Amino acid sequence: MIRQLYIVVSAIVFLVSLWMIFLWVPTEINQGVVQRILYVHVPFAWVSMVAIVAVAVYSVLFLATKNPKWDNFAQSFAEVGVVAAIVMLVSGIVWARPVWGVFWTGEAKLTTALILFFIYCAYLMFRSYFPAGATRNRIAAIIAVIGAIDSPIIYYAAQIWQQNHPRAVVGPLSTQESNLNPEMMITLLMCVLSVTLVFAGTVWIQIQSNKYHGAANA
Amino acid sequence: MRNWIELLSTLTLKDIGLEIRTKEVFTTIILFSILVVSTFAITSNNTLQIPENVGAGIIWASVIFSGSIAMIKFFASEIENETLDAMLLMPVPRELIFFSKLFSFFIFLSISEMVIFATFSIFYNVNVFSTDVLLTAVIFNFGFSSIGTFFGTIVAKAKSKETLLALLIVPILIPLAMFAVEITSANLAGEQSENIKTWIGLAISFDIIFVVLLTFLFGKIVEE
Image (cartoon, rainbow over all chains, first blue to last red; front, side):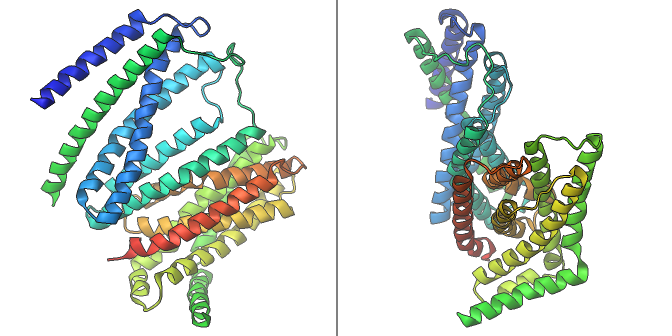
């Protein structure tokens, strides 16, 4: 019953956010229609960051307690989080071209997001290439912890790098601050909510699937 | 303490002796890197004028990829002959085994890099050798060797080792790669990087954090 209710609520919130993005929210005056990518990009960036933190936290819990439940949680968050990261990266690239004049810059946040995406791809690839068992799960958790420790260093390095290599902002908005008006803010929050609901639901399905898959392999 | 040093040197000399006989790691790093550097030189129409950061990128990308392939070779014989398992059965701290592998690979990588720098200098008619770049190489190689040894041990028994190892170590090495490219490109331009002290501080901190962390975690990945 709760599951059906969750699906209905998520579907309604999702449809409402689509209506808000395409019909309700006003078009941003400087960037034009392309600014609407914000309502996809930010929610997916948010859930992919949540996923990365969750993978690190559950991996530490797994290493501390050896309870396979936490390993399953970490794996499920990584699997869904990587898909969210792909949407975040692609939407960011598509948005950057008309606004900044380039598809990609060496900006610290972009570099960190890309590298973290690679680290969690490696985490998932390791899980599929290494023989299944307790050793694989333990090493995968260690990889996730190393990735989490490395991320602030990557961000710091990218920031120093950026000082010497100013980002190539050549678009019309390069010097303008953009502020969201209340309607835009409400739409963004609605989109964050809808993507978070879909994300949480997908992670839950993935956890169940991995649980049965793990039990079948055991 | 003295026993530890003796053990460490014995284990390191064992790897060096083995490498002198087989020459697998040296051949892999040197040949692969020369191939990358010369391919870039040939495909860029042998133009001597390339942007400094591109040149520095070519050097360090070839070091990273050839190093990660060589790391597979470094562990291949240990796995084939089951000597890694035999070493782990020895009544010595596992940290010593980790450090012996780290030091051996550090030596192989450092020597190979001198050949790579010389090759790049010849093809592009520049002088890569300078105090800053050599210091950078030492810091970079130490970090690379520690991360490479750790993940080399991990992937030794996995499928598609080469792809997996590159995927594991390259993203983690990015801060060190940025540091190395920054210092080298400034050197190729005949200058010194503006943030050289910050970069060296960052790179040394990176090395310390990862050597301490991986030494601690090495015991966990080989426990069985």
